[in-house]
Picture 1 (cartoon, rainbow, N blue to C red):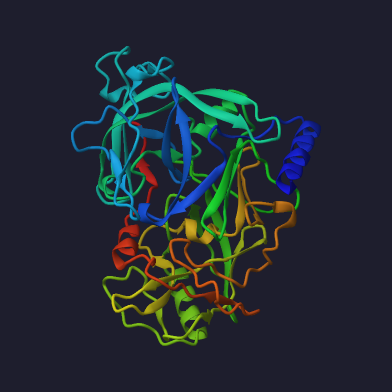
Picture 2 (cartoon, helix red, strand yellow):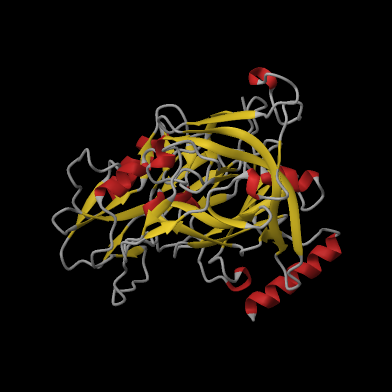
Length: 452
């Protein structure tokens, strides 16, 4: 009922402001973090006529929406094995030939660069190469219907004609865990779905996502946020625009530094990557203010700063951490740590931050606990504390003192809930193994080569 009241209020405000209702996927606005698929957030989208459903990763670091389609041999994932039953879960594969509303995009389309076209009327090929090692998607561009609904109490059907990739060949991490059933690019270029919806007048040129500390979330298109959200402007590069923001100050507990640098806000990167001097300042400041013994460096662990937990320990204390964004608003890190299980059954908690040599990325793990608004009209990033279910009555404090354990980990229901900045320790045998965290090092889905 509270959620319904919130939707009605949002609809009334939208009418007052002259805006259309926000849109979301026909299968619902829910998203979910799936640890076994690269620690990315996924949504269930439906495309074509008759409609087919696909579980796609949400990526603000790239532009093209693509689906596995008319796949070449060994170039797509056809199914996933259930960890509980061992049975294979079949994944849909798109084909333009089976959808009555599908058309192929020709080389004379405005979306197509004609360097690889034999003629103006031939099919437009695409190839998107990602920063992850040997990771790419290639095929041809197609048009078809993306099934959406208004995200309000009326639930009006909206069928949007969009351009996306018929991904005939996938390589790299797309074949080893990340985005096995498609990638939903949410970037700034004209070919992204938010851009198409805005250009066709179906939604305002903005979208929002929420990442809850329980691994669930929300997404909708045309959401412009609220008047009480905090904001920072995007610093857009003309050559390849991304959701780039500027950070002017870092605070870790009692330590603060007037560091200025830019970073890409990217939901397609699992864990945050920062270069020096920011990485070293955060890591060393964090290390100097925690109580547990630091774990010896281990090549099997992607994180450099990890700490040992005793057998009976059910919480740990970390310093408050926040970033001051350009404009002066502070962005608190609600979930800067990750708990992992060692091969001998023990536990470590790690500062879930990776060192980068050439690019700064605010990854999905630093977005937890916020309703995030990517407002491409005002060119600002907005954020507001949220539990993703009832923004009006969210009980998440500012700053948050309870960094959440990954939802892939089973949490002891009897853990001690302290009032300080503590985090519960998972129990049981559901924790991700080292391999799970190691593979996330490759989940950097920022594309550096667009349609060619």
